[in-house]
Image (cartoon, rainbow, N blue to C red; front, top):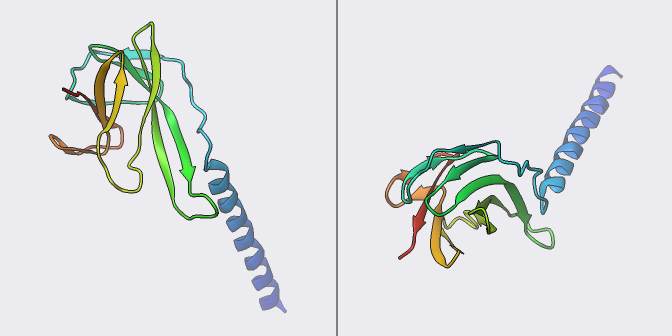
Length: 146
């Protein structure tokens, strides 16, 4: 009898844990993780092509704009597909104009993400750099495209 009671309690515990894990995954998919868009400080100016550390809500000053990491957005496959992607979201602003740009490793092809701002072309390197190799989780490089 004690063994049956133990098995029932164990099954309930496992089911509860799976329920919360499944709901947590389901809630995060296709939603933007809440972020704080307010900038609490601005890091010193960095040049294009330099490795720079970033953190949420801290603006990084580049020659033509400031870049602020605002959070992540999850995208899951449709019709019950098991894959998902995370997009790192950044706000770019020059005081007059602003734009949201993102970077994602997508389905595994880790390449720079090109974007345009005020008529100039740039790119974000986030996980892997041709010049620096593997980047840390909180590092990126902004390049000016020629």
